[in-house]
Image (cartoon, rainbow, N blue to C red):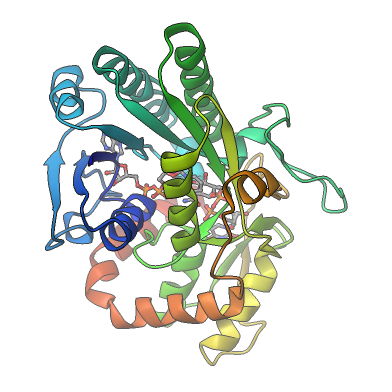
Length: 330
Ligand code: NAD
Ligand code: DAU
């Protein structure tokens, strides 16, 4: 198997590449990544049987060549941060929608298997006290430029599967955490704020709930779907990890030896989704998938330890990231 991984130098993509490299030692992996501000070649450097092609998924010719030489494609590449999409939406339309169109056309032309990576945010949000969770039948109702472009990309994949017979599957996963996550995202931002001697910053009143999953569990779910998922189907990936943002910050502060209330409340994100929650029973029942990182607090402690030990990885991005937040007032 020669696997093409778009966006494989980003957070989840590079964790997936390392997962596959460990779990499938006879596979060859080609990472296809533009190395935007969110991609980092160090994330995949020095790995056996892994090569990097620096390229844009919107560059039809370059992508075509890479797809032609592979057996299957896992498509992670995207603009992924909600706050950026609220400030500057066009790159999201371009990469997430137009880029996915190019991925679809390339796999269609070459008859390649495709797994498309998406998000639970396509379903909108839930009330805090709603007993319902997202299922593959939940109607799409995205809120932000980011989630609406991811929803658009999913719909393109569904249309290409039905109209052109593209051999595609889709997964919609909840919030990932773990090593190599960009410092713009919630958990690494707070850890690195504390490591920089500042206070964590909670949007609004910190009541919003996210359904956390360790990125390693996302990877095992994607590999299971790639190998055993039914073509044309959508699978939701989640590990029953619902937690309010305030609770996450309190846990981090405690793990890092600071008072649990040593945080700041800052301006809320416009249109901020209140709660996400995933029902992953289709993935569990059909493919026998189980998350291995069930203990969120332990996963957080490992993640804090990773950022402590890898200052050289995140420090170069930190000042520019906080300067962007300064502009947003958050
Ligand atoms: P990330 O921002 O860390 O990484 C994105 C990667 O895509 C980067 O390496 C970047 O260089 C690359 N990229 C961006 N534009 C590109 C282009 N035009 N051509 C080629 N490469 C390009 O994102 P992430 O958090 O790792 O998310 C990866 C995927 O998983 C995305 O599709 C995202 O929507 C989805 N997802 C993320 C989460 C989460 O919690 N972070 C949850 C569910 C789904
Ligand atoms: O649900 C899956 C999605 O999770 C993915 O599709 C996205 O790519 C990923 O970025 C993530 O989106 P969120 O918007 O939920 O993640 P973020 O890390 O930006 O924020 C998590 C929560 O924390 C959210 O409620 C906003 C809040 N937040 C965020 C930051 C950066 C804060 O309270 N303070 C902060 O400083």
